Image 1: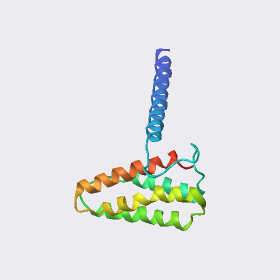
Image 2: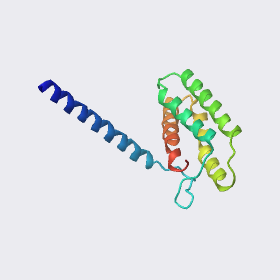
Image 3: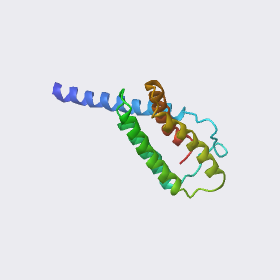
Image 4: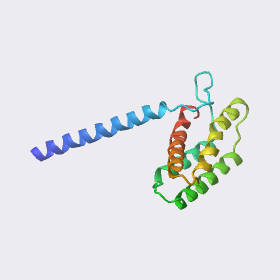
Length: 143
């Protein structure tokens, strides 16, 4: 009987901690501001499916990357990210102000990509971290 009670309490504790962790993550994600990008009358811009999927793919690539002190993995990371970036541009169907805001969002990524090949490890790491934050901030402006 005590084992069942302990198991039930353990499940509740784990579920609550996961739920709280997810809420904190979403709250932190919502606080990411992207310079030069604005909302549409306080609301998210509508983005085409390919753009949103591309940003999700970039986020996955960044999340699965293991940083180290050699440049080769960063070069491969840059290539993988740029391949997705090209697809986002080639499949963009957005128009008007939403399209302009998307470009405002995407433009800083080019510098981040280029810095992934820096000879200075600190520059690579900083660019990597900025890219991660940048991709997470997408949902603050687009749906």
